[in-house]
Length: 172
Image 1 (cartoon, rainbow, N blue to C red):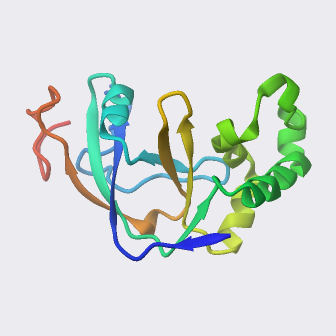
Image 2 (cartoon, rainbow, N blue to C red; image 1 turned 90 degrees about the horizontal axis):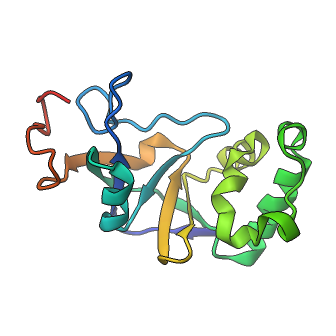
């Protein structure tokens, strides 16, 4: 159920510029903010992160997680779907997952992580990150970070129109 990662992996996060808040990757905002119903997402696909940034910042982090749950594994996916479908907050908000209406859960595994019950279960089990499909059409995968200690900020990607940003102390 949980895969062990032996070596750090570079991941990317695209953040659009938001004047009302400090963009992830800027000095002072380099630790992913995670809540009970919201992990922090990174992809291992740089062009996808650039697209997601929409002219903002693309940050590089190193994933150092010891325990990564792979939602490409159908057993793991179905186990979390069962927890999701019993979560009272989810039931009040949108009801149980209906594949006839919403499609195959395998293509929307990230939605399972909207459930506080799923997130709490994973945290209790010591899962630090979840590997899942991000965009089936583009064959992009991502990692949902549950424990911010399993990623280390590395640098901001240069050459994307953000070259005025200094990686360690420049303005964002």
